[in-house]
Image 1 (cartoon, rainbow, N blue to C red):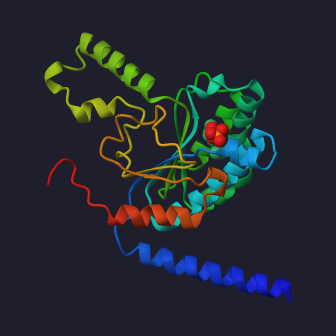
Image 2 (cartoon, rainbow, N blue to C red; image 1 turned 60 degrees about the vertical axis):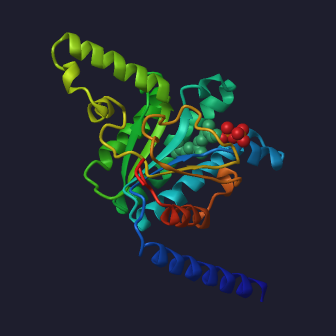
Length: 258
Ligand code: FPP
């Protein structure tokens, strides 16, 4: 009997979710959603589990979020998985996070391929362990002809370094005559960033109640809408993403106009 009630509840919940998705699709969907996935450590601590258990649970949420983003017609989903500052964490935690792309892609790559998702990565590849990079590059290669959602992992990414490197490259290009000061504008500057191929995020989500950017896409988020939630990343679910998009759809974006 209990099982029957549970089954009925699940079916009821998924039909409510389906209706909500259809309703949301009637209004403009943000093209690029960026997420600072925060709160894995606190989620684990609340359950007296090691921090890495929170990261593992967080990885499962990446899958659900990706599938819903794809279903909604979001074009790019950028996920802040590891910052250039995260190397300061204990070695066992860093090692664990660096194994997650392998586990995630080892399990879900066929599903991503089947659902037309393209995997990409932005960040400094040189410092990544070989096994991490290999998993990401394999996924990028196997999904390169897909034209659905771009799942863009920000891995070993830091916005200030990205901007500094862009400036250095521009100086070098200007010295070699490839770039003249007269040509330099915001669009050209953007083309030197790791996000050159993507539009700026329309919506930034940060979980876990922290209200800061933590060196994430500082240039690109200039006109993005922000949505913060106290929900810890491992508890973030489809309804939360839909709520963020509903709030986004009600906002008036003026880009400095009136
Ligand atoms: C921040 O929470 C989270 C991270 C630094 C790691 C995020 C990684 C994942 C969600 C998994 C990524 C999955 C793939 C496939 C790459 P925190 O540890 O700072 O949490 P706390 O603030 O509660 O301590």
